[in-house]
Image (tube, rainbow, N blue to C red; front, side, top):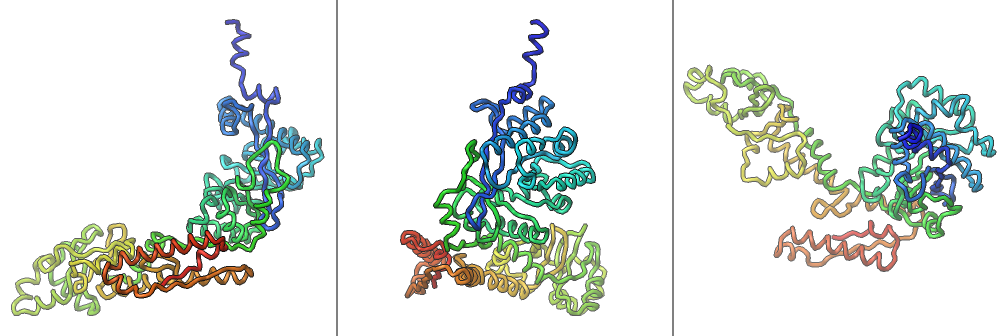
Length: 498
């Protein structure tokens, strides 16, 4: 094969696309969640349609393999800026850049933003979005780059916050004007209390730092209403519009009506598993008695000396390598030691002689439900003997049957304020909180209180388990009826069954 032909076949494909101007731009709208207007567009690059290099991931993967990633970023910026100007789009233009590209081609003689001047786009309308793949090796140099950029009037956005390299550390150092919450936290937020709490934490820091938030991944009505009611400024997602070469000038009228409606979101409450896990650790801490332990080689006289020195100590744990081996109860030990002639012959013998072979052990991370099973178990030794509390398998302290009953009871009473301990339907606090939000927003709503008469005989006949299932089924029927009657979204959270 001739050398010149071989060179032509081996020519980098990405550079060919750039030289042939085969790249194109698409735009996805950013929506102001208060007004319902489009306040800007994120620009995204595309390769030739219906080819393996059409989508940006494939493009940049190939560019990296060919060693021309920076060239591709420069060409992408030029393509997006020119298309944005040609389409006479209003609002902000968001351009994606890696940290390396920002340092090499946005600041310097060969500025990738030069097309802004050529197209007469005001730099104050431009937001440079730091992509999630960015890794900043020299923080001082990059901060200098950011300062130079801000002098021109452009703003900085941190993309996909909460994943990859977009961390709190980066937020604090860069002080971005905009932070885009990753779609992982937004998609399904209406039904996930942990996502909800995570976004609330981001809001708190955004307020403290003067940063504007954009929620990515809004794909359905339920998530949109939650995000709107949380007070997040802007949103982006398929619900408003997909990336397109012909950008939307306004969102769908139904979406606008929804944003302006009086519907109030039902904020997700902690799930059963989350609440039980959290309160379990708290319960274990409440019943923990910090008490000294004795080593396995201790003798009975050591146990006696410890009990005499600490008269309030109900038991002593015997440990080996920080792990509990057995437990000696004060009453049982003292009763035996008080017998005639026991102290002299048994004092120097191993402490294991009067110990319980298999003590009850409660791991500190044990859930309240697991603790409650101890109360219902046939083995009730812990009531008299007490039990050992461990943390990651190592001795942490002791507990008594009395403190266990108190801790489980308190945890269940606290949980009952948020959800029924039997059915885990919403409790008084979330219902009252939601009704307060409805009243504060002057939102019309319906609330119904349903009393199932003669329910106790049903429980007595079929058992509480079946009774709980009936209550949950009744709640499901009522919620479905509310939806059928087109009652507001908030009606589902105000259903109370007794």
